[in-house]
Every structure is written in C-alpha cells, then in structure tokens.
Image 1 (cartoon, rainbow, N blue to C red):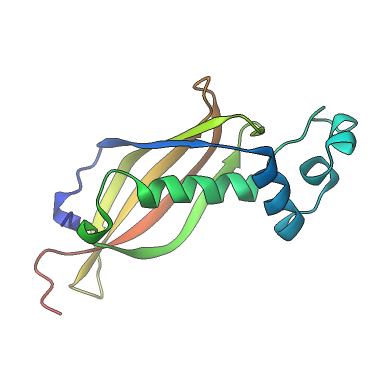
Image 2 (image 1 turned 120 degrees about the horizontal axis):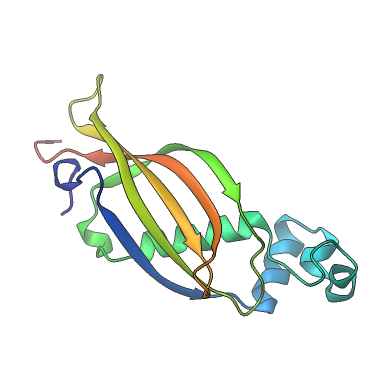
Length: 151
C-alpha cells in the first residue's frame, strides 16, 4: 500500500495512454456539454476551432481515468479522495484521434491538523496529447491514509 509517508515532494509519475474517439467526444458532449463544436462536425468546422473538439470537462474526466487506473494496483491505494481542484486550465483543445497521457508532480505534503489518520498531498497534474503538447493542467490536494492509521 502506498501511504502518505511513501509520497515524496518532487516525485513525478506518468500514467498510461488514452485514445480519444470521435464517438466518445460526441457522446460525452451530448450528455454533459452540448455546444455545437463538441457535437456537430459541420458546426465545429465553422467555429473558432475549425474542427470537432472534446469538451474540457471530458478532457478532465479522461485524465482522471488515467490517474485512477495508473501504475498503482487499485488494491494498493491509500488515497481517500480529494477536497477539490485548483488552477484548472485547458491549454489547447483535444481532438478525436489524440492519445492522452498524464504526468504528475508532488508539490507539497502536510499531515492533517485535525485527523491523525490522514495527510494532504498537493500535486500538479498535466495532460499531454500524442505530440507531447500540454492540453490541460490542474493543481489538487489528495487525502492519503497514514501508515499508522489503526481504524
């Protein structure tokens, strides 16, 4: 199990690859972000993007999937969730056919002041397309179980 104590400030990690399909871009957008440049190829060609692009929220969801399915076996995780994301930025659009990958860097860690069983790890997540261009980033805290947790 990878506990709070095992996480080191400055460590970086890489998380898999995810191929973005047009079908998925449209399906996600129809349900959650039905703007014309996400759901209609012809309308998208007339938009500022000039082509169909994924919703930023879809990009965030795909990035989260890579993070969750990434190098740790799910039975070996001591992560307990997150109180939120800060500094969410979409740097450039994601297009059908892009292959996404995620990199993280631990920026800070601190034990909880109110709960002995946990600590907070602040990380920067960056999502890249197959050309290694930054498409999205965020900074977020993750709550980790401490090794000495007896609960």
